[in-house]
Image (cartoon, rainbow, N blue to C red):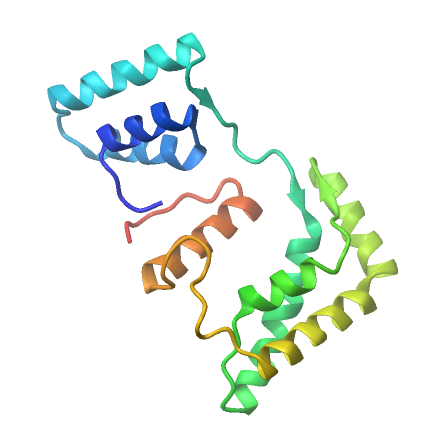
Length: 183
């Protein structure tokens, strides 16, 4: 989420009917960093509170589950891409490779750390070869047909967007991760 004002965040929440965790975090960051809020910011926060209490806006909880397959595929893809990029002039997109492989693999959802550990063990025992095969096929496809001319999902792939994606991954896989600096 790009840096937005409290007023814009509230406007978006009222329009969508949802307050996402990212929107909530941004409002919190603005409130924490501001020495004093403007009257318009207070009015916007008041509108948001009334909308939340009335149910016109619903606060979406943080992700309460993970897909362990994403973690396993990303780990495999990053490892393989690093090897290829270290030994050749090729440049590969880890996101494209992971998405291609994930679309061909079963999801492994978990809601607890114990469940996630079980899914990891199960994947190592039953799916390790299939994961490696699908990541390999994704890499081959990416080398044959790079997606340089397509626009990535969401926004342009700028340095800030990469930081945002890494931050999102950390929030998913390390829920207690706290961002220390702005981008």
